[in-house]
Amino acid sequence: MAYAVREAVTAFRRAPMLTGLSAMMIALSLFLVGLFAVVAHNIREALRTVESRVEVVAYLRDDAAPNEVNAARTEIASFPEVREVRYVSREQALQEARSELPEFHSVFAGTEGNPLPASLEISLRTDQSGTEAVDAVAERARAFPFVEDVLYGRDWLDKLYLLRRVAAATTLVLGAAFAIVAALIIGAAVRMAIYARRDEIAIMRLVGATDGFVRRPFLLEGLATGLIGGLLALAATWAVYLLISRSLFDSDSGLEWMPEMWVVAGILAGATLGCLASAFAVRRHLREIH
Image (tube, rainbow, N blue to C red; front, side):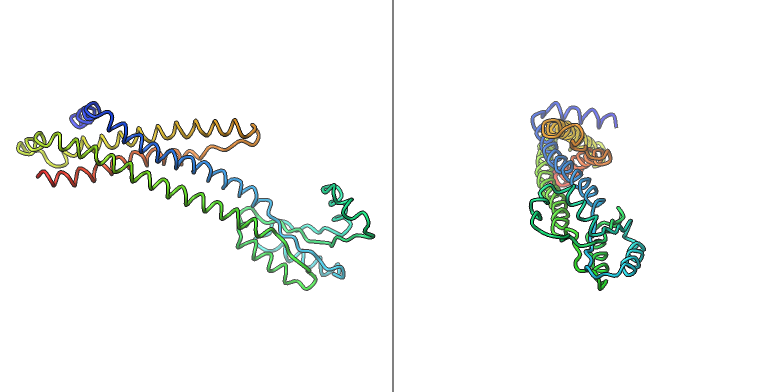
């Protein structure tokens, strides 16, 4: 192992530009993945906040009997997806509209009486607020004969989930594209090192060196290159995260940093990418100089 480490360090000194280019490509690929990971994480957290506030509002007919409404309220509250059911009378709806919507006075200034219906505001459990659960509750609430309409903002909820899927897919595609480029550069660096030392490798084989012994320094070189790339990507992502968070958001509503497990996974991904690229190049080109 001491020989492998020494040879790996020598390889870095022999071709610092090529090694640096390999590390930079890995850093660039992981940097882009890191940026999209920060965005995806914040979108996910925003969705959780939105999901916790998702409500299904069932508007009631004016002739709905109080005993039927109370029975329906109890039944809906027993649904596994439901956290709470709140009955809002017509008078309460009018009072809340006047307090929450200043323009309400001008819109209904010439209207006599109360134009707003009574409703049941159905709050969902935080672990049961996906689109399927919301749809299921809305359909069951709509089935009551005294329910005139059911609303819950299906369109914008679908758009939020679509945004999360697009962010995740974009992260994977861009990260994979740059990872392939980084792997090709690492492979080229390893191939050049093998060709430069092909006479030395041939002599080592003559004295009994195995392929594993010959391969080990190149694997360490690729591992170190990937690890350096991962650390550079982490530093760049953190710098951009701080810049955006401090310049575009206040201290109370700033961006959230990605989870620690994602950070560790990104660094390990860089090291793994470098090691695998080196392993593939060594295996292929050792066969050519047999």
